Image (tube, rainbow, N blue to C red; front, side, top):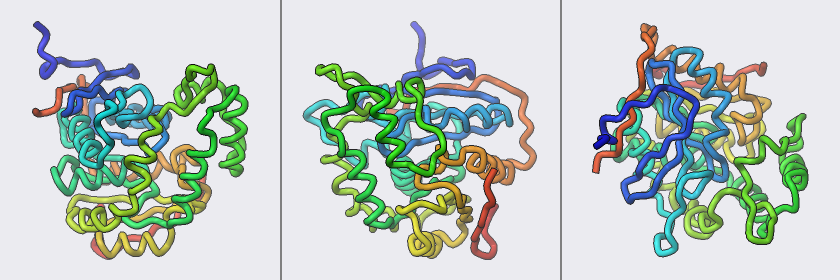
Length: 319
């Protein structure tokens, strides 16, 4: 009988299923380089495909990476009706995904993926370094309200891919190109009325997102316990992360580096992927200066039971 804990997958751009601690299955994509490993966790309402361009460049630079759909998103399982979504579940999912890589990866977490990853690191020390993408332990309420309004604006769904593309374009007017139907396929799914709805479980809004502001003190306490290298990449056009929230974060994590991408909004990797990935690769090269690994298969294990840049960093910050 095949032993899942010893199963090896060739590094490839193909879907995997990772068992979470409570039995749910998380959809993931592994891409290899064979070198140091990177775990990519998306934000609320996104999918692992938001990292596709970055994964391709990571592989080209010799890094292995695993991007996964958070529970209730994309093609990962949704919670059963009797089980509300909780922070503890997302923390456990980070642990399962990190264990799947079989190493101590660098976490790259955007928005919700960064917040829950930061909590996971404080509790379980899963990661060798953290890259937080436009997320800080405190955030601007007006920006959070704007995101919530967008996510709840069309509960009945969309009548076509073109309709959804127009709604996204209105929300992100700074982007020059509209989403194509092919780009939207992983973000939308047909409902029983043959309309297109967002891929994520709507219960997430009432069970997890609606009360997320109460976690700001918890996340702040967790941030103060982080002792691995940290990079914060923020968007210059973000209405969620501000000078004030960055300053608070740097008080909690004085060794953290901060790079602001002026042309990006909260959707940093989608707005300016070249600049984002350039910044990420620079950080990774600093963490692994002598790494020039020979390619080898990554091991997948089940869980145990361009733009100008502006940078700020505290003196003596680890690179």
